[in-house]
Image (cartoon, rainbow, N blue to C red; front, side, top):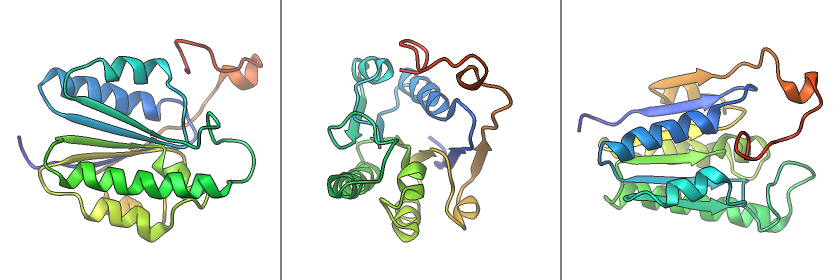
Length: 174
């Protein structure tokens, strides 16, 4: 494997987690060992079930047991789960067992104040050269773009949530 790179998928558009999962599938198909830690989310969505069924893929959820932390102010357990998530992602990156490490929604954890800018940066800085690292989620700490090798900003042009009043649908958003 060549030297790993640091990717960030951010922006207000749909598709950040989906892009990371696509990369996870491609990597697993090539025989890579994949770790995906999901911040904020604590629901075993369809993609989690599928990824967990693949050889060499580990998926960990760092939500709070309340489902998905999107609405309302964070609770003390939300901060504790985010801290645990940071430790688990760092361990996955540095233990030599994974080639691709995805920190899904880590940017949202930062945006909500569950983790500090310094903690966000520290996770990126401890990445061994052999590990491919992906951060997803809306928001990006100052200086984050400079640390990354690839930044993709998903921009919403039109969304059926707003135009048709639809909510998340099984098999598409969850």
